[in-house]
Length: 160
Image 1 (cartoon, rainbow, N blue to C red):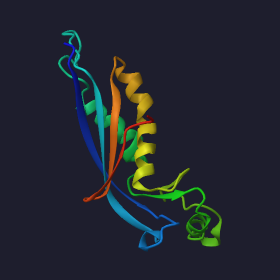
Image 2 (image 1 turned 90 degrees about the horizontal axis):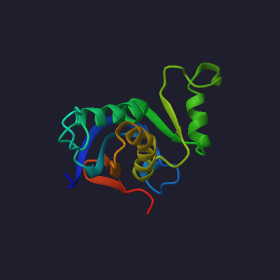
Image 3 (image 1 turned 90 degrees about the vertical axis):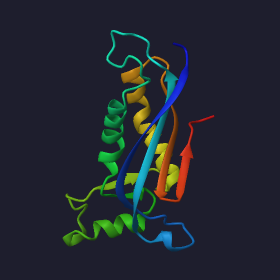
Image 4 (image 1 turned 180 degrees about the horizontal axis):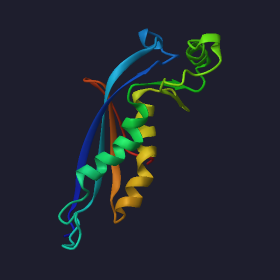
């Protein structure tokens, strides 16, 4: 078979963040129920000796990568921009004596502002190598979509 096809898998997680440069209420620490959809494209595997015969990619395998690299990292965490010194210091000061991170907090320091747009780029970067290594062939990520709310979504389609 030579048909090209795309498939998508979605995961959800809860996380907090703040957009420190925002002109409105998003500059305050808050949380979201995020949804991320990864769309992969390629050719259907036409090899009866393979377990993924007739598929582009096994949905369960794609979900496993997404869970390990995205969900398990961000779920119930607080994502903070590395240059948001006020937020970082505030988090540190929650520990008696202000000596450092409380060990049971899941604080994820991002190199960029933790907006839906930047989370989409970050998610792509987290899973791209694993998808290529595990599935090879000509399978590739086509798109990562990140819903910050049910009506607000950012799409990343790679560097063009």
